[in-house]
Structures are given as structure tokens and as C-alpha cells.
Length: 474
Image 1 (tube, helix red, strand yellow):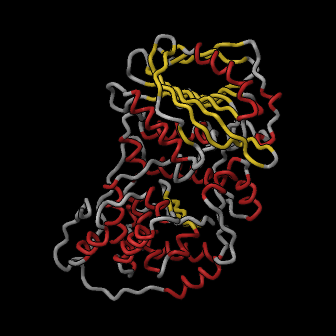
Image 2: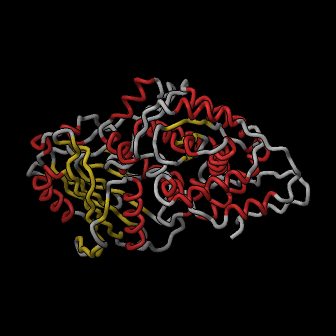
């Protein structure tokens, strides 16, 4: 398949980036603000090298060189950062921040290949792909509604508090093949304008596919192949004016040499460290965390890794929580937090950490963007897929099952993963239950996620069952 957005240049004309358009309900300033909030979560959920690191400085210099080819009136405040992760991957956040894994730098055979990865990610920002994907979702309340539902009340948000990674996974949806084709096409133009051979981008992606195992599929799982990338890019650039392409491979070699002395981590190690609050502390100590990040305090900052099950024992007395879309009863010694327009957390104070929820319930409301009915099956599938993709250790146990909640038929799925709670220095198992029920009018959905560490499951399940039995959707 050729690139999905042929730009139709006449023979010998300089290529120009297409008009990215606009997204209703998400201005440029709003996207930049939301991107900064998301960036703050990356520095809590992942290790990031300081801007003073020679590898980061190299990537920033390369990024600025690529940025020069974007029309200023359509550009974004791009930032370039490096994550010391072994896997080959990179991701972009709306508004400009781009993060490149150290494994990607090490895997590039020449600077043009690395430039291709960065230019590809820059095009995702330029075309506003993440925001556009969110606005397309039939369950979204709108772009801001989707971001609000994921980011929740401040920090990593209620979904992230279950232990999900934030960044490429939890906040931003998977790109479509059309998005990837556009990112290839735009990335090729950005590379060409900066003096790099655009074919190197396609060659790098093809190399990852040929590797099969290892880091390749991690990048390609987030960036699905739109077709024959090499042929598509070749066809795209054949009518462009000839240019003597350059590549500062010596600078890349020096960056690789500097990278060889940096400790790297696997995706699973990063996910586990996020639950324990390791990266927020490490990034602060190393000076990596920017001083001007948005404040994002959480509802609590308990040491959930060393949670005492006696601290979270639910009261036998329940009290009501009422919202326009639902009512529910919950233990009166637990707390509620969050935004009723996105999601609510009900949990013991001891379970609420800065980036993880050790136990409790998360309740979210969803509506179709343009009216109409909502499919419970589709909603459940999307939620399960999002949870699994965002947390490498979380897996559904079988298919969704029918469940009756006060006369309303919904779906229920059990999931297991690693809890932020530890025993002898290792995470205990976590048991989650996702329940999705439609509203009485059928114009929306209510989802509930009940979270329980293995060492407190028997203590929590009766309370969770009583909460579910008390749920009344409107």
C-alpha cells in the first residue's frame, strides 16, 4: 500500500508539509497545556536522562535541526528527551514533547535513521494525531473529556493509579495505519528539508520488522506498518529535486559511546519502578525533572509498597455517593476523590499513592461524542485492551461475562497483574475486576474497576460486592 496521503507534487518541486487542520474543542494552547501535564507524568512514571547528559544534548541538537524545516506558524514547541530504556521505541505527546528510548539510538546504523524516527514522531505532533484519535472515539465526551478521563484529578489519574504506565501507553491511543502513513510522509519531508535521505527512515523501520523478536515489535506495536514503507517513501521522493544528503555519523558514534555507560531498563522494570515511586525520586535527584512542570499533587501519598492490610479494613457502615449518572454505597471510613466529569476514586487513604492505587474502586462515565447508542461489548473490549496495553503485567482472565447489576445487564472481566504492594521486596499479585454497565437511557456507560492486592483480597471482596450490589445507574 502506498502512503495514504499523497501530496501530489509536480516534478522537481520542493515538498511542503500538508495543512494539519484543527481539532474542535482542543485549541493549540489547550493541547500544549495538556501535553505539559502529560509530560509531568512521564517524569514520574519513567526514568529520563537530564538535559545536561551528552546523549540528550545530541538528540536535542538533531531535533532542532529537523524542526527548522517546519513552517513557524504551524510548528509546536518541540522538546526532545531520552529515556534509558533498552527497548527500541519513541513516543510523542501532544503539544511538542518527544521521548526517544536509548535503545533506539543504539540501534540506528547512521544518523539519518535516527533522524527518521524523530521526524516521524514530530509529524505525529504536527498532524495532531493523538488528539484526533481521541476525538474520533465514539465513547469520548470530547477531546478534553478523554484526556480528563485518563489524567483524572491531577497526577497520573485514576487509571494510572491502578499501576498503568503513563506516556506512550495510558494517555495516548494507538495510531491508525493512516496516521502512520501520514507520519511517514511528513517525516520524509522534514528529513529532506534538513538534508537527510528520507529513505533511511523506511530502511530503519524495515530493519526492525526483519528482526522479529527483541525491541523491534515494541516500536511497531505502537506504530503499525501502513504498508510497504520503503516503496511508499521511494515513490514519494522520486519527484523531489535532487539533493546531496549528509549525515553526521561521527556525532551519532560519540552519542553511542556516551550511551554505553548509562544504565538501561526493560519496559517491565520501568513499570515496576513506577509503582514504587522510584523514577520520580531518581529524576529529581539527577536533575532530570524540569523546574517548570505543572504541579500535579495526588489525593494522597501513602507508602503503598509497604501497605498494612489492617490499615485498609472497610467499615461495616456504608454511606451513599450520589451523582447525576449513578449512586453507590461505600464504606464510611474510605475517601472519595476525582472529577465527576471524568472519574471518581473510592479508596482507603492508605491505598492512594502518588502514581498507584493499591486498593479501592475507580468509577468512570463515558458517553458517545455525537449522541446515539453505546455498545457495552465494544466499550468493555476497548477498556480491557487499553488496560493491558498500558501495563505489561496486566492480563484479562478469559472473555467478558454477562452480569446483572440491579436489573441492568452489563459485562464483567477479571484481570490479574502486579500490585504496587510488596512482600519481601517483590510485588504481590493484584486482582482487578472491571464491570461495565449501560445507563438506563442507553446513552452512556458506567465502568467500575475494583483493585485488590493478593494479601488483602479476602478482606476487600465483601465490601466490593456490596458496593456493586448498591450501584444504581440512571
